[in-house]
Image (cartoon, rainbow, N blue to C red):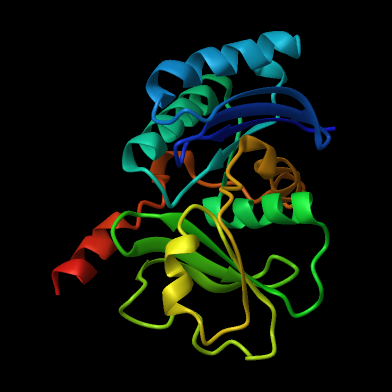
Length: 229
């Protein structure tokens, strides 16, 4: 019955939850935006107190690793590393985009076979961070910064496949993807809650990362280089 602490700071949402064997026992979340520096540590403390747990009772930390806000990702990574180092607990790092898919499925139900998920995070202007996943959440195209009027990110998908584009970057992609069979959803689907089942799966498989060398998945450096061409 692993006890996991989940942190989500990649976007405007600051979210912390505790789970025991995949069941959420405490949640703290704020969606007002960019308050991670002031809220994350109190949220962690409050969640631990609500669950009546000590840090030594954790089995692992689970972090949303990006892509997303540079500052938010740094704050989350610093907090996760500090707890891992002080408790000698392992760290699980999960793509924010993959966690969004988990959130979509949790809210909307099991997808049909062949469905393609395209989570999108707004990166300003005509840029989004995006990735492609199949109906079993296996990665089809790795996370990347995408200038939505520069190329067709969905090229290669079957015209008959149902593609679901969602997240806070999805709606601005509509005019550029009219040739595809797409369902658009502007909901964010970013929360520590969406890390729970993935975190449990990674823990069972012992998919831990090297804390000393871990860096969040910023992607922005690549995107800036693309824009400047």
